[in-house]
Image (cartoon, rainbow over all chains, first blue to last red; front, side, top):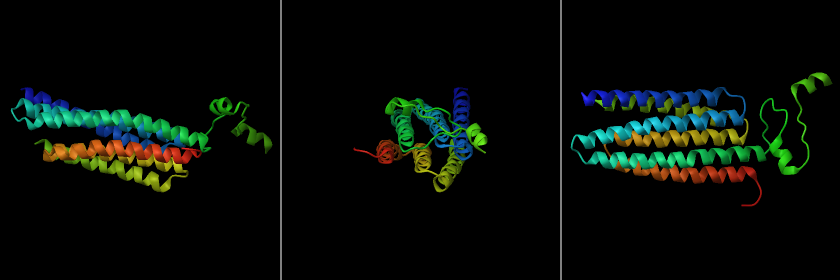
Length: 136
Length: 87
């Protein structure tokens, strides 16, 4: 009975995780500029990795419950890997976004740039689609 | 048993890696390529954990922990290089 419930939870977590990782792939292909791609790629893989590794942790705990002590080592080490992903992935994404902004990549369809105004101290006017239409 | 389903999950994760590699090859700017590399790193870490769960080997999961920390350092270093300026 409890084995059926545990395998149902494991299947559910595996399908949620794989769904979000494939969603990250779709967003990485379809979005128009760096910042939206970063949004899709980093957040979705972090969320998917939580569920995929938690399913492995549950499998290890089930093995431990059935009497094999190898399962405890599997569960604890997988959980440490999950903590490593959760600490490093958002930090890396923040560093990439800041580097992209400082190397001069602008978002598609942006009108104002408050971060650049704050850093340089003068007002930045970006060319919008309406301006190019007026010039023509 | 659960091993067959975990192999199917590994196959789907491999499709995700292929999509991210397409973004690395296509990406117009250097920041796009770094984003694709970050996604590939995360998916490889998850695949290592699942692989360790399939074969019941703890060693693969230890490798995944070290890989996570090293890929974080490499991502930070590439981002710092893209920014320019002093280290």
